[in-house]
Length: 338
Image 1 (tube, rainbow, N blue to C red):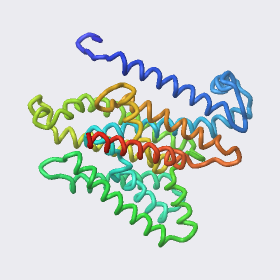
Image 2: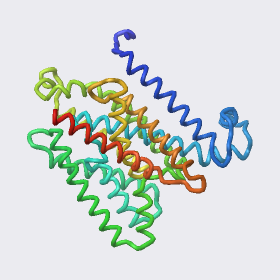
Image 3: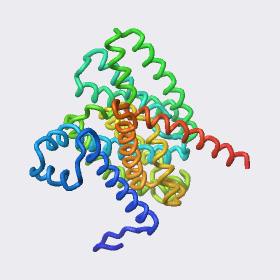
Image 4: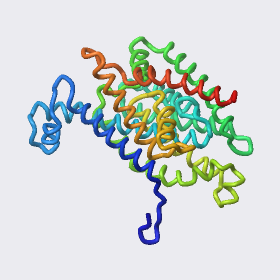
């Protein structure tokens, strides 16, 4: 497609997959807004959004359901995009931020703040961002040997993640029962009680980070050809890799700051998107939409599976993600043995 001096190459299958994912996201969002203790129709929701709905529904929608849905979409999109970045940079389907330590680093920063400042939500978000960035710098420097190779990045990240998990457990063991309970609840990853206080910084960050990610993603297929080929085509491999890693860490950090460490979305969304689009590398836009659909659906299940209890969404993603990880490892072993 060409508009003036600008041209973009469009492929039919990714466009079709993107349209289907968008429709699935709209359907899941509609179910999330219309079901629950206060059932409503789509027409009621639309009238309420324009200020003409029932007063009771207006309270439920604006205070509880809509902020929760927007946080779920934003966090799922951020984790999907971050997973696509790290899996492309590491050239490994296991190279997601929750496997190589960045999510655990964000949790470390947030737990430190929770134990010091307790209920200060803004400080928790800042602690998660700083913790993710510090852990990313540590992983990058330890993995650097005349450049960063994907396999080494994954191995170093898994080691750093294990160390940080032990640090988190130690901090919880030294905290009071109330502080440890608060930090443990945050570590589960939850969308319960999310308000506009989390929506605004999350979507403001995404408005900057997602366009930057899409811009940088144009270099990802060239980088996947190998460093010599990328350098020959005028793409500085190490600088491009560092820019992508920093963007992925920022996406992971803002998602963790909004909802806590939610596992397996960043791992599964890029691989599902790559299989749907039949692409050798996960595309940013399909992975972003897949992440949003997965998290909204998982949150809907967390709210409706047990009517009298709202489960943390991290439990549902962890349960389904564990089965997915076993399948992924079995697939990789089968490929390596043939």
